[in-house]
Amino acid sequence: MARYTDSSCKLCRREGEKLFLKGERCYTNKCAISKRQYAPGQHGQQRKKVSEYGIQLREKQKARRFYGVLESQFRNYFEAAVRKKGVTGENLLQILELRMDNVVHRLGMATSRPEARQLLRHGHFTVNGAKVDIPSYILKEGDVICMTEKLRQSPKSKSVSEIAGGKAVPKWLDYDPETFTGKVLTLPSREDIDIDIKEHLIVELYSK
Image (cartoon, rainbow, N blue to C red; front, side):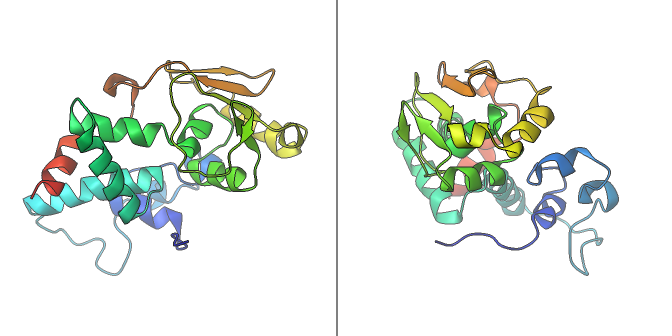
């Protein structure tokens, strides 16, 4: 399966803001954005006039990289959002938020989405009692996510709990730190999604 293997910090620098792809490192002075607030490459510091298409493209790329989704996957999510009732842009963000890797991260069971994907692929989580090892699995209202006993007992889960312990869980989710169990209480609305993405620009881009 295709996946991005280059430096994650380059993606943040290209978008000009933190995408929180490196977990704890993103909250320290080691973050690349804190040191070099310009795009990577030899022409990264040059000022460029950006077209309307360029603005729309950057917004799409930012959303895609924030959630760790490949181009073809993102296109499929957009088409699914078009078919759903409601506002297409909000539907798209809702689908992305309901990805299993994103929910594991939102619950505080992983310090970043890439880490959540790795843990999922190793079979460390269940949904409604059944093992799920597919990061792109789309959760539904009422689904219960649980960490396996093996991961609960590992030093990894303890360090993650310490790092993520002070972070608030979105109101559309519920998390019990005693049992390492989370639940999707309701589908997320646009107000529940705290990322700076102008989804209408993405819709405009794909509508051309």
